[in-house]
Image (cartoon, rainbow, N blue to C red; front, side, top):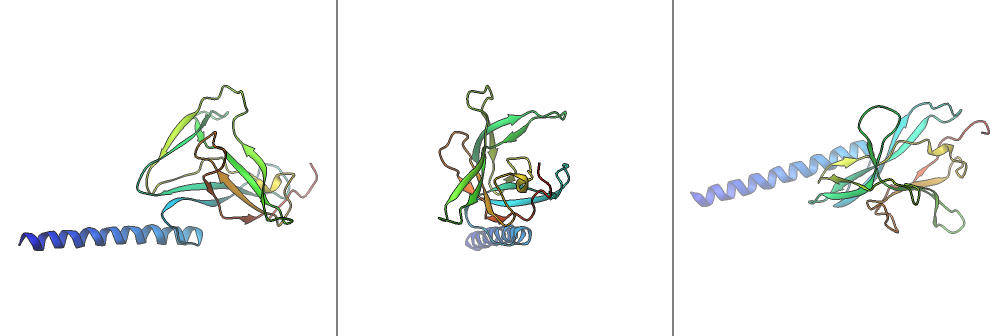
Length: 182
C-alpha cells in the first residue's frame, strides 16, 4: 500500500513538473516565437510611442529571463528620475551593431554610470522562472551610428563592472530612422 502511494505521488510530481515546463515553453514560444533552454536568456521587447523624433515610433528594450533553478543577483544602480515614485533599477547594457566587413559586434553605446560618479551599486534578485526589463525602452533607431537595416543586439551585464556581457538578445534589424536631420 505504501509503495503504491509513493509511486502515485512520484508520478503526480513528475506530471506537474512536465506540465509546468511545457506551459513556460509554450508561453515563451507564443510571445517571442522560439523555445528556450536552461540558463539565463534575453529577448527583445518592442513598444510603440512618440517622443517627438520624426520617423521614430518604435522603442526597444531587453527582457532578461532566469530559466535556472537558482536566483540570480544583478548588480546595477537605482535611477531616480523626474517622475515621483520609487527608483527604477537598471543594469549596464550595450547596444551593439554587426559590422558587415568582418562580422564582429561593435559597441555603439555602453550605458552605465559615469566613471567616478557617486552612484552607489544596487542589487536585485531575479528568481527562477522570473523576468525583468533592466532598462528603459529606448528609440534605438534614432542613434546617429545606426542606419535602417542595420543588425543590432543588446548585451546585458548582470555585474555592473564586468569586462563582458552575460547575456545577449537575438539580433534584430533597425526598421526606422529619423526622417529629418537633427
